[in-house]
Image 1 (cartoon, rainbow, N blue to C red):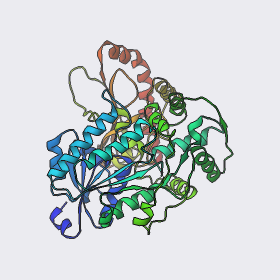
Image 2: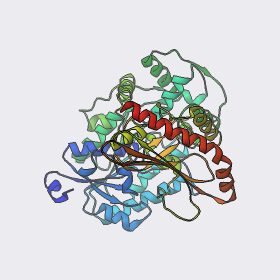
Image 3: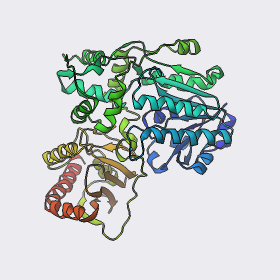
Image 4: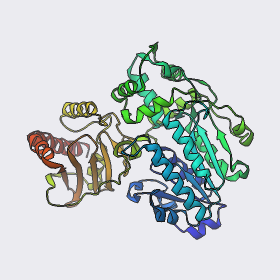
Length: 493
């Protein structure tokens, strides 16, 4: 990116954090379309492969817990968007991690002379008994303000949009369960907001200096209950659904139910559900005064827009994009060849071009499924869910296209080389680390070598027993898979 030229053509140079997440990934192209220069901050730049806007931004690898890297990311920046937030604890309390991260970011931003920080937090009356999740979201805003920099904090409730975590939870519950047993939290008041309206607020606030230093509550056109959200979703889809109130159903039990019925794991569902015990509605008119040009859409319209996006396979980002959802905040594992790594490789010659072979193995999973032993994959997914894993229900963000960081059932895309290679890292519960890799190597003008490789790095004796006990089954499954995939490719060719 030619930063000097781009800055000359725009008013602000913006830093966007959390770009592999749901909101940040959608904000970047909209800032670019408005003429702003953009730098994106990520812990692993390789996970941005496939983004349509990648060649238009400046990429900096940095971590909120590494002060020096933060200073590199914030250097020469005017406005910084802060979209970093944990959803589940991994050792240290997630709220304490959020506080430490925000404090580091605020101090580094002040030292680098940032003009303003823009943050998206959560709705909820701070005078009430907020859940840990909502309290942490608001504490993050407080910590950012301690830097003495102007902070614009938006507070929103449930986000309605294709691929959003809250929307996916509602969608799966309504689509799959005609008769729903509902605890008290289903009847708390809530004011959902469409993703398009959130993005409008986030982009327009840059040109409104009067929003600096403000806490701005934002919501959609409708105030309802979570139960209303489900019944109205059913109405949009033409479904009949019934809700049965029950006096006692704890957030923990509710999260387990959601874990089994939806793609959302219980570790993420539980903080969301605990937050729903609070009414989360807009109580001030600050947003209307500061943004009179924004007229938030109603819930049914937001649902229909989200469904249209999904039907057209035009989902920009998904809740499952963020590694924090499945792997904690550890850096993605990079595959190495080393002693102790078990490798199972198969190859076939296919009468098709490398691009045709590549397109075929990049379309696996999701609704299409896998080329062989589909029932075995389903059983493996069920077992994984029973052990608290992600299972198969995450599907795919897009039916045909993949990019680094995408979820594919219980795999995560770790590496892509267009026309050549796809490497998937396993995220199911296993005693070790595993990868499944596909390659397309040209042989001549008419044929391609299809290579399928399974890698397993066992953890201790349990890992070794796991590998050798399943090896006979893998032999059948992986042999059938490459054979059926080759047949499919040649048939389509």
